[in-house]
Image (cartoon, rainbow, N blue to C red; front, side, top):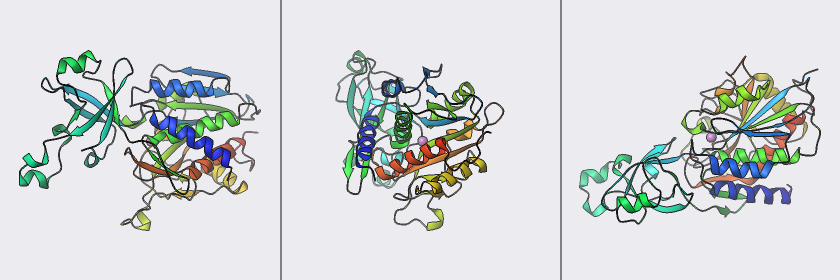
Length: 360
Ligand code: CO
């Protein structure tokens, strides 16, 4: 294990995790990524929907490989500001486990980019009836308290209907190269792509590599299709974060992926049957370079690859994921070593030393 590489992965994971980029409002994340990769690719631009696209050119007669990671994260949007107390009512953006929302710390983004801290509250427990205590609190009965006293004060600070925010928990290091934080889905993929771009900055490539930091994945993979249309690849991989259910109470046959076993390669999920030739190129190159990997059990989840493979004339695609526990929570847990091996696998797929599925 390369210690300097692990340090670099960790510090980038922390920075990416702490940015706020709720679906449709990815600009802070996109600007940060742009600052990291400018000068390391030949072409870079933001598309009309807000995805960041970049090209690293290879031999024009050969394959065009699209590598995707989504820049957005799940969060919430303010739906109403209470006149008394300036409490914020909100709707979830993307798939939260609504059981975890109550009592969480949040960050709300004001118009000027300033961040306000908040807490998700509901009717105080001492005022609830016995039957209310037995059922889960509905999101529509919750509110966000940002410590203000009136609607006017909230709005004068640039927070209003349509403002977005995320659940927040600080980035923390655990033993065994594990880290905990928010938005690992899919800043982890973003981390992998940035490392890949830097790795190949000075190296000539045989295949062209097309990078997409897509907007809007968590609300139905909205940015990846248009990104794939613009980039016009001949094959694609989405780099994702997937559910590690290697926890008590889960049968082996129902555990999609595991922490500590390297990247999980998708054969099928709800949005895609992975193309066998793309998986062959992944697996044979992993074997060639002794990179640990495992196969993610079908049919859990869906990713941008579901959208990408149906673009234009059809694009053979697959997904490589870093396993993560407590995904879609602000306290997601993963292994930096799994990110390290995912970077190695992506690099091997691009270089293709095993010479699989390459154009003549
Ligand atoms: Co994701």
